[in-house]
Length: 197
Image 1 (spheres, rainbow, N blue to C red):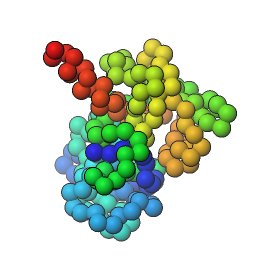
Image 2: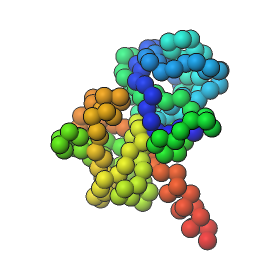
Image 3: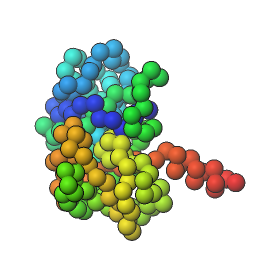
Image 4: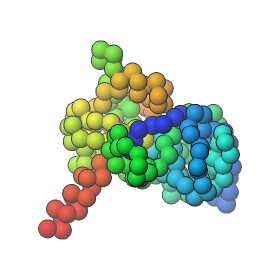
């Protein structure tokens, strides 16, 4: 589990093809690597990956074909910036919301507009996901926990404050940028509970 509070940005250092899928090596920048063990989870742009090798400045993770098809990780090239978050521990504060690191779909940035000191970003998602997106609800975009400010058709809108722009990859977004979307876990479970009632 994660919180959606990005701890650092890193860069994709290497891409290695392995039997039809990929091994990615991520340079972790300022991410704290203390007490990392083999098999630990790290979210990369909101995708939960398992560390299969690491040193003080990087880690490697295998990415399956399923994950490459369901996320934007296959779009990345060497030197691409990525959001990073280590998994939640029971002693850590929950600053964002509960995030699983299992991407529900890929969205597309359709608008970016200044809104005072913030940037208002519109993101279009697949119609099948809109039922889980509510005004003032939580959503995760590339691993960043955000509050939905508005919903219109198959698009939702979020305001990104300067701190978030500086600490994440969002400053590099343009119209057409593809982003990983994870809807709120509570919405998912509520649908299941109501559906089974």
